[in-house]
Length: 113
Image (cartoon, rainbow, N blue to C red):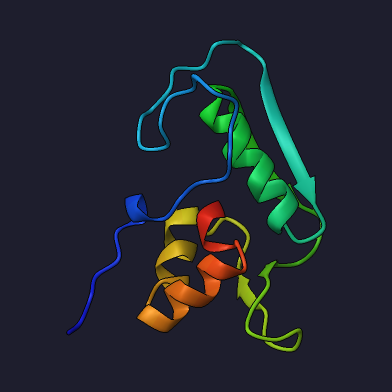
């Protein structure tokens, strides 16, 4: 049986209670915008992006390296994406197979996309 995995079936990182669900489009509550920066725009800035976005804030992610590098199956096999790649594209790449979904859910990366 071939299974299709929907993004909505993957739990998102915890956010403060009372905030809109991840599939809603919250309206910004402020004219301020926030930028999150990480060397390769990896886990820490991606999680901050999710949490701030779920809180209804305007947020953009940046990196100081040359590519977005996410943990892969080993330290020698990171998942590498060009800057500017949409999180939806990263998600699709890391959810291509049932094994990928299980692995990237277990290591916490899939929930960040």
